[in-house]
Amino acid sequence: MSRNDEVASLLEEFADRLEATGVEYKPSAYRRAAENVREHPTPIEDLAVDGEDAVAEIDRVGDAIAAKVVEYVETGEIAELEALREELPVDMAALTAIEGVGPKTVGTLYEALEITTLDEMEAAAEAGEIREVKGFGARTEESILENVPFARESRKRTRLGDARPVADDALAYLADVDGVSRVEVCGSIRRWKDTIGDVDLLVASDEREPIVDAFVDWPAADATIEAGTGKASVRADGTRVDLRIVDDVEFGAALQYFTGSKAHNVAVRNRAIDRGLKLNEYGLFDVRDVADPDAGRRVGDRVAGETEEGVYDALDMAFVPPELREDAGEVAAAAADDLPDLVDGADLRGDLHTHTDWSDGGFAIAEMIAAAAERGYEYHAVTDHAAGPGVFGNVGLDEDEIVEQAAAVAEAADAVDAGIEVLHGIEANIDTDGGITTDDATLADLDIVVASPHSALDAEADAATERLVRAVEHPEVDVLGHPTGRLINERRGLDPDMEAVSAAAAREGVAIEVNANPARLDADGSAVRAAVDAGATIAVNTDAHTPRELDNARYGVHTARRGWAEAADVLNTYSADDLREFLA
Ligand code: DGT
Ligand code: CA
Ligand code: CA
Ligand code: ZN
Image (cartoon, rainbow, N blue to C red):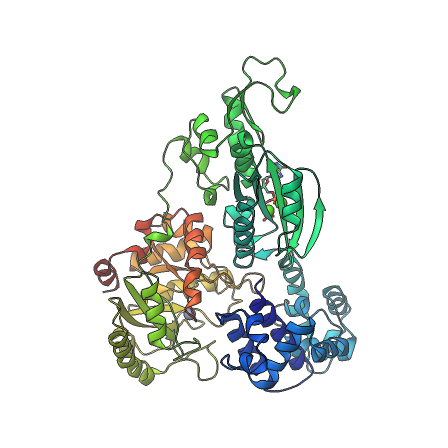
């Protein structure tokens, strides 16, 4: 976690705790400040050494908040926050992880029942105490009881988007350590699963102790969990990071083994056994002439193991991209040399779902266009929120504002003049019945319409399927945005039958979005697979609200790869002409 992220998280906790004690307005000021601190390109500690005025230069950071930031950088704590923590000794992060429970509820339930943890919350709900609290009822209590297990589970796994930067930092650090000849991530993070239990790293080296010593000295490591010979574990940014060190000749076999998944490994190992071979984390061995193949780990002649490619090759199969290693048909496909040619980040030519300060984005239209051009994109779609259910306050654009924005987008595109084609669209809302809550005539004039569910995200599976199919059948809809509305570790979202939705999308020529925001990754890998199988088109979109969020595209690409998507399946790999044709 960068210091900016760290300070932003503290300001957010500050906001939660102020809100819990009934303070108004101030919490949203803290949250806006947190967002801008997180996005600010200068390391916060560099600004803090220059004093409060330098910190207050950050947009939306006032003098009072700037003073607290300086206090934190200088002393390691904020006295007022410590006082708030003492006043309300609750595990705020755990309790607000319960769907439907916000800081205010946490504050009220602490006052009434002294609930401070998930266990206490569950016990109180089970005992029927919550429904007795003023302002609460049986329904709220049932909902809390239902959602506690999900909150508890979600706290054990880290979102890919939080873990991947930690892994990247570790990779860069270890690559520079003396004696390291190769380093790779493995485990679920190499398979780009949407949540990560722990980060696994593999190093090839002749040495052991000096590498372990260097690893526990990694600046991002907050604590050492264990340091042995040949392996070690640390905690970084709240996530466990495991390191294994192996000899160079065994690196490929170890990488294959520790990448998993376990189910994939079992299938591959069975293929080895069928061929009189033995596969383990030390190598691939020919045991046809060995009396007792189980006598040791390195019994028989080494056939492969230095590289992962070598291991798959010796098993007469194509190299299996890590994203596919889930025992979902990839072993048979690799054996038949019939694996998909997966989409790659370099294939993307533009983003089809982004926001600006016309709705809830933080940046002007021109800034977002320029940022897209900087990333080498050929086209860029501006799709701010339309007004409608689930889009609160005056965030969403009504029909008049959409027309007004069309002119502003054209003007900004001219002003930026970066040779990038700019599409003007909207993110419209799918109501409970699958209707679109913006006028058809207004939608018809736009280049692109993304339609997303933003309300009633707990509907029954059947109702959700009907709702999304109906939305897809709307003549003006081009892209079905974040189909389930899930927020990883926070909200389960809809549970539609993606086969049925995908069949409708394929028929109607509507693309199904893989929303690359790491809090969403929606559609997920298995839903993408259903879509691709149904012949539907995918769109990998970031839903960026800031220039930096355009870089989240990588998470969407790897999620699409988990769904076996090829470039030809992905709308925003199309040329601008082909894109226009799809949208027309
Ligand atoms: P995670 O950390 O829960 O998100 O999932 P993974 O897949 O990273 O699992 P982890 O960290 O427990 O182990 C890393 C990989 O090591 C796993 O994907 C497969 C391999 N592995 C670990 N234990 C076993 C085992 O008992 N048998 C086999 N075949 N493979 C194992
Ligand atoms: Ca792992
Ligand atoms: Ca592990
Ligand atoms: Zn959006």
